[in-house]
Length: 254
Image 1 (cartoon, rainbow, N blue to C red):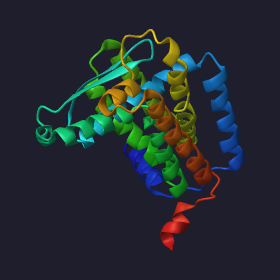
Image 2 (cartoon, rainbow, N blue to C red):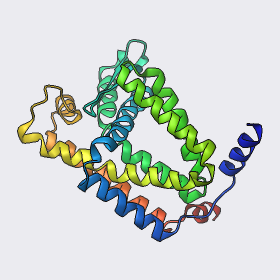
Image 3 (cartoon, rainbow, N blue to C red):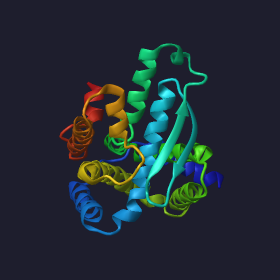
């Protein structure tokens, strides 16, 4: 075990080469097919929902809120509860409203932003750090899960990551790339679905765009366009990083 941890840390802290363009292209094609043209999206969407709720939780914490619970449901929806009970900002209505806006906005764009974060680490040569951050984040989310189905989903996620890290250590760089590209492509699909459901919404639960409209009086469609703009921008920037049109180690060394 000690040898494994030593090898793992050495690989995580040693810069690796960038992925081949053909591999990036192949992964993008495969994930696009699974996300947009496959029934497998029903299962893959759980991962996007997980990151979506984590985005809400992180935004809440960063704006002075306390996250009390996260739920992941069988229908691939989720919910995050946060409050300002112990927050210094609750005394200031303007800042409190801004906190609510940031928290609501950060759900639909979370997968794309996190995917971009992974691509940045890959471009820098440290893809395994992306796996480490994902593992730590999964543990923190597990602590806040308050329903049985969500608990099972998180345990399965952690189990898969542990198995991959221990038994398939040599492919972790490949796994990091696959996760990042999936999040970037998969992050766009729920936004498009949200747009499509505007005219025939049956769910009584309010979407993030509806909450944002209540907080700002800006129309729902504008918020969805903003979600989509951020996600596509992250996708394009990631493409430039993965093809080394932008090479961060070179920029940082100058």
